[in-house]
Image 1 (cartoon, helix red, strand yellow):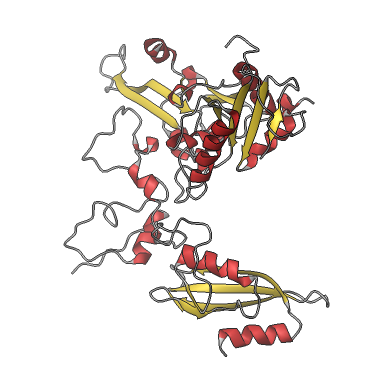
Image 2 (cartoon, rainbow over the protein chains, first blue to last red):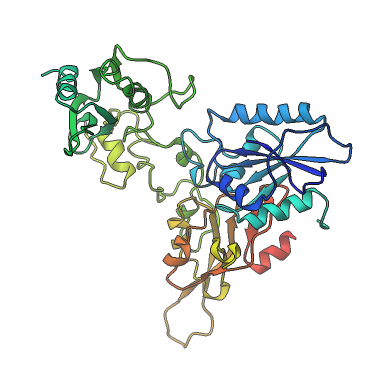
Length: 135
Length: 178
Length: 111
């Protein structure tokens, strides 16, 4: 789990909450190196991406991470639910131990379908979040 | 020979590498939970050894072997919370499930509640649009026949675990008549 | 080979081939396919023929927030009414918006 300056220019910082297999797509999509979150320019945007299955045991920790990001960044991050598991529980929706989507605990701004979504889907949705394409 | 002594004897015999310890619900074949242990002898090219012990499903208790292999503690905690096995003298903390979680999910007579609570899209027949109530429906895989577990006649005795587990996988539910 | 080739593809309905048999909805491991259909009698039969009916597909929806792209529906369909396509399903701001209605008449109503 690390902050990445996605475009290398301080305009968008992304945190990967890597819970399961979808997280591998983050490495495929990201060319930028991890770095601690700096003091942010007021125009900089911040995104937290939830990758993978949210278990009941871990769900409160994920919610706490997003709250912590909001405090650290001084603004509410865009929350992106990446993949079927993070969006709805996915193939494990019926499990005794799985939360049916992280939106059970916190507000999600974008849901990305896929199992897993390809790396291009992550790049495209972050381009949208950063305002680099007309949405 | 008792369980812990058998494990200690294997360890003394050179099988001092703990591989894994697990549990199997043998309902349908035998009415027991089977605790299985695999240990290896790394210094000689020997086949791994497997030890197993059958426990009653109603009161499954077995000695801990965490004193013999410290690493067995995790495996015992997992078997304890998922099958309800009590490891006497072992660590009792939950491993993967929340402290408030109730049930023994990996037993075969445990029903996946989420599947019973959601309308199965496959329950509709060709030519149907709504889930018409009151009509005998197909049940999805993993859910026992309602006569066994869900909408059963409560004047009949409670279903046996074996009836629930067999019905969940589509087997015939044997009903006792009083 | 780009990663777009290597990644899983997306699933579409070929509506004319669908007979509302329900096999895909029943085989889907994640229960993400929803089908509504009704029965209509067939007109124009020769005189003296017995009444016959057919199923008419009203609604075929896949919930992409659940689908795991296993392709079981495509393999199980006896009428080849489902296929792999390369056009991706796009992200959405709500999980309800990830439910795709694939019967054109219905999707116009909902639009």
